[in-house]
Image (cartoon, one colour):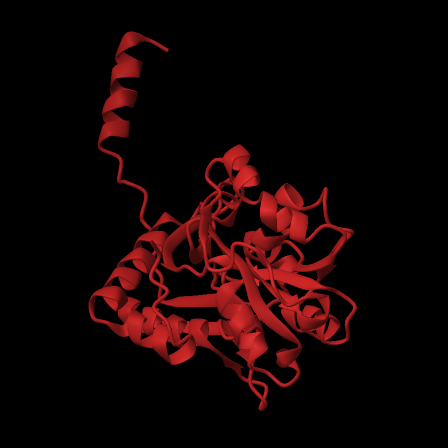
Amino acid sequence: MTRLAAMLAAVALAFAPAAQAKEWAHITIATEGAFPPYNFHAPDGSLAGFEIDYAHVLCANMKVKCDIIAQDWDGIIPGLQAGKYDAIMAAMSITPKRMEVLAFAGPYIASPTTFVMSKDAGGKLPLTGQTIRLDDAAAAKTALEPLRQALKGKILGVQVSTIQSDVANLYLKDVVAEIRTYKTTQEEDLDIQAGRIDAICGSQATLAASLEKPGGDVAVMAGPLLRGGATGTGSGVGLRKTDPELKTMFDGAIEAAKADGTTKALYMKWFKVDLTPQ
């Protein structure tokens, strides 16, 4: 290429129209539909829960039409990447591992990770109610040693592909008899009620809801409140990295709902406690 041709090409590039940002008028949001009170199927088959209400608020703030669909948890990220829907709102914690493949808006809610213990297995765990941060993995393992000893030889239930599964494998795998994984929280609830597992590691908000259900009185909340590190920074809206405009829209809608008090009102409606990310 001659010097003149190169100069003309540079001028043409400088004055070329910028790539048009994608405009969103319709958004499809996927949720699990099996993680109460965040999201679940009501008796009539419709989707309900905190994230369903919250998604409608965000869509109104963004002034777009939204459809909310159910998607099994273990296929929810592949479905997004395949273009089956545009966003995920399914109590998905923002972690460094997930940020390698997804963009996130938020976080919009943060419930610590903790445990329930079967009454038949003792019903108690050390460090109950104490907050332990997992940012320093080595220090966290030392701090969790009383818990590790209490769970030695026990069978621990977790939902597959969750931050609680990561926590269990990082800090407890070498002491428990088994880490038993479940596709849904309902399945692990049934197993603790039947005495097939001794404890569950899960979201505090979801575990509290499980204890309120029929049969939930076989177990009690126990153990420390785990934050940071493998548990992430809270739950956010999962998005494709190729949709930056959508992240900007969701972030703005999240801030607006927080500022006008709507988010806190929904926390109180569904969880009876303020779960603002710390």
